Amino acid sequence: MRQGRDRKARFAVIARDEEATALVAAAVARAARTGDVLALAGDLGSGKTAFARGFVQALAGPAEEVPSPTFTLVQSYAAGDGRTIHHFDLYRIDDPEDVWELGIEEAFADGVTLIEWPERLGRLLPADRLDVRFDMAPGGGASERRITFIAGPSWKDRLARLRTALGADGDG
Image 1: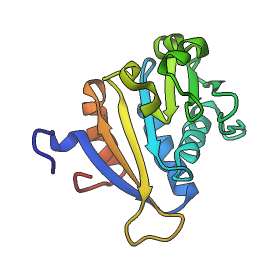
Image 2: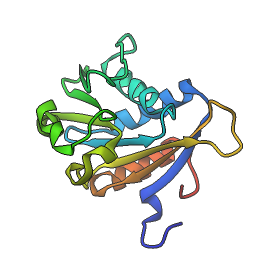
Image 3: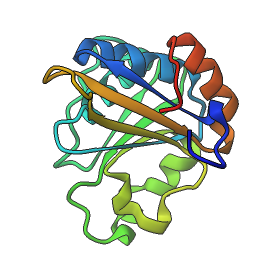
Image 4: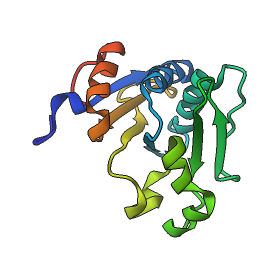
């Protein structure tokens, strides 16, 4: 465990395939609130978009088509409960200031925001967020992913409940 971190503020799970990733994402979606920002980080092909798809479909319905917004940069979806889910892919952003033109400030205020390539935001990335890191699972198959969650202040209690719901142990 890293020094200075609350044990409940960080944990990891192994998702064996894309379907398992979607189930993890659905559990996170059920815990999400309006104003939440989820920073989805990892290499190309690590599972960020699969997670976003599972998250959106858990709230907007399984028939919702959720393509990667690599070229559109942002896609928005209406959740069944009236919230809006904003899915940003910032891979092609060179200057963090460019995100203002995408409506990111409004997204932060009125919905749940998923951000792929959050490091491209630099100082504009909110400090109070849920970091979701995707890595190849050590010793796992080609489709296994280690998904690590690190909670910002508003996520600490919810992350502890999520950890229990997912049956996770260890500190990530």
